[in-house]
Amino acid sequence: MIKIDELREGFGSFWGSVSEGWDRLRHTAAGALTRFKPGEQTALPDRGQIDDPLHFPAQSWSMLGGDVFEDEQRLVVRIEAPGMEKDNFAIEISGDTLVVRGEKRFEGETTEGRWRVLQCAYGAFQRTVPLPAAVRGDEAKASYRNGVLKIDLPKVQPGKPTSVNIKVD
Image 1: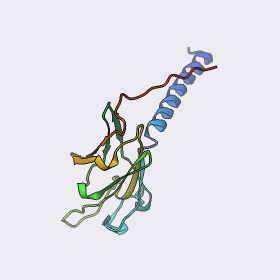
Image 2: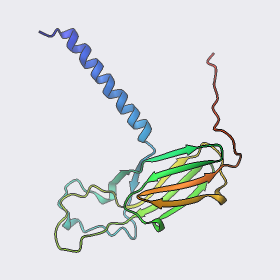
Image 3: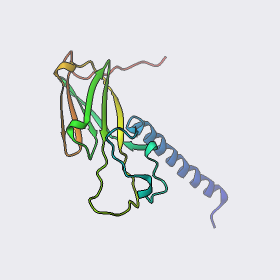
Image 4: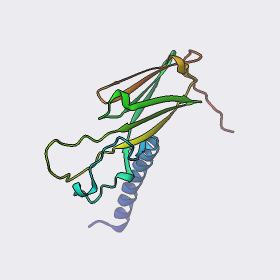
């Protein structure tokens, strides 16, 4: 027979693990969570063609996961944005932030029928990525392959990524 203290300890350990995992997910994914708003060319189906009761096109959110890589010469930003064309992106550097805008367009089926589930996000979006070093935006290059937007940003002052140790008093 399990004692109440053992049960309490087991639940506390479980809850701590879930809480830690949630905090990590929230911290890591906060920048990737992106709002999509219906744009001029989104072309979503009419609400009457969708049986999914949870589909609200004005409230679509999606994860646009990204990576930032740094070496001595450059920063490389990769953003996962499947289902788009390279012409659907607008990229700019504003201060120490990379701003990626775009619009993911809906592609309907050619036969008649109904949409039972619509879970993908469609519409106009903006994703911002803080840059850890100053870059030469006029020399930046971007490519889009296999659903991944890759932006290569040469550094203003080449050098190893810096790290600073701070003493706690």
